[in-house]
Length: 142
Image 1 (cartoon, rainbow, N blue to C red):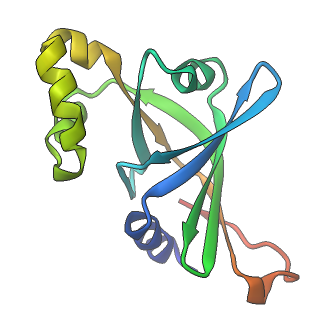
Image 2 (tube, rainbow, N blue to C red):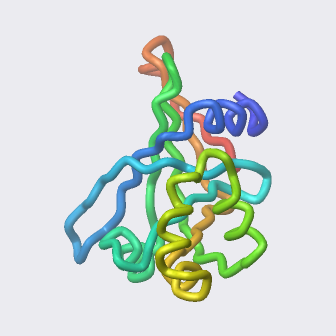
């Protein structure tokens, strides 16, 4: 599968499960990815979350997407992105209407200090399906 096909599949199935390291204890949670494109896999979280603290302490992670008959796992490092234009894009996106009440309640300065955006660039992706279960793994750099 090509990089473009994988990115299309991830955007069509944006729920991802993220595995992080919490002082040696693995932690997994499902989150809604914002987008996957040539710049990487992008999502957001808040500074009050354990998830945020875990990624700041150890940015290595693996994400897993269930995409119909396929499972896509991507390993790599997330980087904190302090891009105000990207934060505005996220907050104003129709899929992120749930963020508006927080923004209105907190005000822009506090809200944008709370909202943190992460991106995984050059993640190493593996696409799996039952038909290929015993074949050697193939990786695609996203």
